[in-house]
Length: 91
Image (cartoon, rainbow, N blue to C red; front, side, top):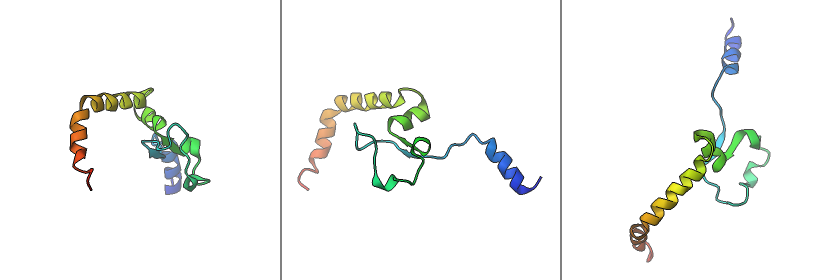
């Protein structure tokens, strides 16, 4: 079997997925929309943003669970976080 046939055969059995992932959507609650993305990607198949990315990695509702964790920790450590960032208020 030639090397080209071997590569094609291996690629057809591949379990790997190549895509662009953006773990956070800065435009929330609007869809992620950058002019730089226009025409560059097959968006439904090559781009995963925020919930699509985290749910793809870890299953349904993973993004929601992640946000819930950050919110709980943020509430619990609010005073400590505020005190830490006070030193940057005068910069």
